[in-house]
Length: 306
Image (cartoon, rainbow, N blue to C red; front, side, top):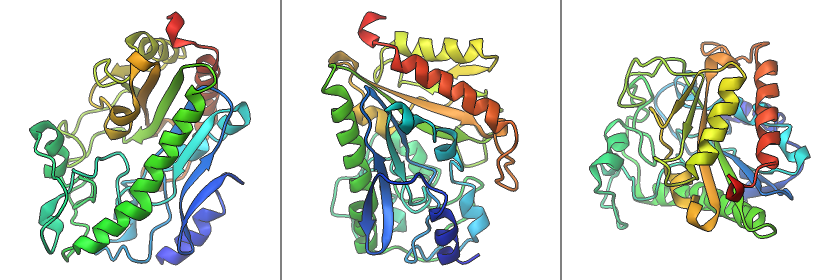
């Protein structure tokens, strides 16, 4: 399928209304303002593949990088007053959940003028080919047979990363201001079994949910445990901070000392979709009921009282 066809198909399946940041004729970010202390964001569910991507691998391989359908799992949330932010560009084009310092300089045709990450733990993803701009798919398939110009990477940051982070920052500020606290859930999905180049635990069978708060640094541990306990009570298996602790979006915006709580929530794709065809399964309905119950619980929760 040609990317332009995919763009037309996928654009028709998004939330109606809201604020959309435009790049040329293509939207990159959708923000739906709310009126509660709760913010949800989905940085990896975008399916609009830009014409300038110029990737070498086929589209089917690229689509395995998507957190496909995550935006549909939470489509009830804006009606409950939840702030919603969604990336429309694909994760393999630019990963909004990475810092702009996580540049894989081996991809570039010239020197990078900005700072480059040096922390070995942070660089582990870059070594796997999963920096700000992906080098390979989760299965290790090269995405490009060319080097990228510094200018095009800078353009992706300006057109995608900056608008996305601005939208998340604005949503959290708006959620926090009225009551003095905010809860931010960074929404993701994960394969049932870790791929060879996805994490440092290839082949690991994932729990139904992974709740991450970077070892209690981005959210109150009591709030994170409330989320874990609620999901366990619904009959799901839950892992806490393994193998996903949370990355840039919770790191950047979580500040529990200032009553700004950010939690990364990973959902096992086997609970709602066929990972081969990417089609949603009937089980998605029960999962959405669980997610709605979690959102309703968080809407009633003041983390200062935990």
